[in-house]
Image 1: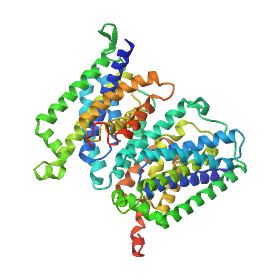
Image 2: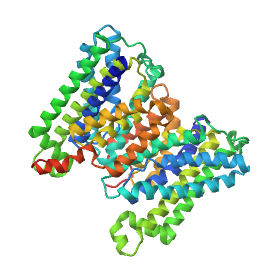
Image 3: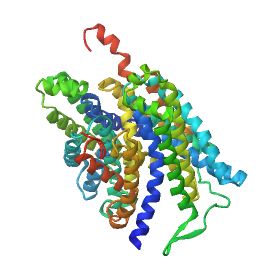
Image 4: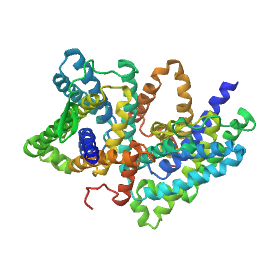
Length: 287
Length: 281
């Protein structure tokens, strides 16, 4: 029974990782940039979720607004942060992105104060008996459902729509896509919108699970999401999803069995290094 | 006078630390996002030894050897991965280091090591030691840059496949850069531990690794003087911004972004055109 509970716990954590990692891996696929500042958008999403819920009383509205607002902020971040330095080596963009991320934690601190903010009346806290005695709060179930719905929607978008096809074409070969009439800039803006909106959703989910948001809440997820997209093979969406769930499960088992040797966060990286030594380009990359 | 001496010593340690990364990232082109771990290894080694009664000077070699040995292993692991994968692997090293330290009661765990003895010769002694070691390390760097090994590093940084085609044992030189660079960081760590007299896992985290990488990049990758100036400026900057303490990281982050946006080749890049006129690149 305990094992199943740990497994479920891991899958919930994994769903959150998946929502964050998806935007990162899409951005990497398109631009070959490790978008560290993605985590700022995750934090922003969390704050908006709590503040809008507290103001209006509706979690659903908060989630929707957070995703839309953060989506636009994500588009702006592409225009301001990456667009001017696209022709530079990727390391330049990585450092610039880290700079923005460090600065943004400070901005959150200045705007929202150094202490954590909580929901006035935390929504979805009822415990539900999912199956034979395993109790989960509604919030946890909602996390998994939401991740599932969003990722399913993403899959539909990628397979069935012109935008999705054009995006996949731009990932495989940007020049060829451009000469076939794909407007690569539009694709990039759309991807930043979608990826950032997903990060915001993850932010709202985490704020719900922990019932608090704080300026530094983005730090650990951002580094871990980087590890995840590397594990999944940079730029691979399916790889990132599988790696997210895997890491979530490994972490939740690992903290139980190796908790006295390593803390949760270094466990993820120990696993990452181990995998990279065996498969230097990620688990799901061919060749 | 004491305050100025502390600032100056900090500055020298930062320069030594940044140069040790410059050897790996600048000369050899291998990005490391986990260099602070080696500063930490040196700091912990040295602090444990001086606490058991050894003089600070005697801990320099052990600090360098242990940091360099672990650097050899990390370097050997890094041979398997490249570019962004390397950046993330080294980032993992940084988290792994703090994670392991946190759980080691012998090393103070979460609480860190306090009460590190004052170095013999006090603040002046430490300042002089930092000065000598930093100058020594810079001389070694200049020597390497001017020797044919410098050209080998250049070729690896530029294009390691081509370098290996023309018969350069890329692996060996990369490992050498890692060993020397991490040993240098260990040395800086030994000084650092006795400068601040208190160390904990959080002193050597990811932000510190990024800070030192940004010194190298703002200074201009591979430029010895550029990195020296950048490390000096960036290490004293927090002291200037102490007045508006809340905004320290904000200013710092924005500076990183702006430097990348408008000065992507760093301070060293400014002088490059000038140097080209004299027939050097």
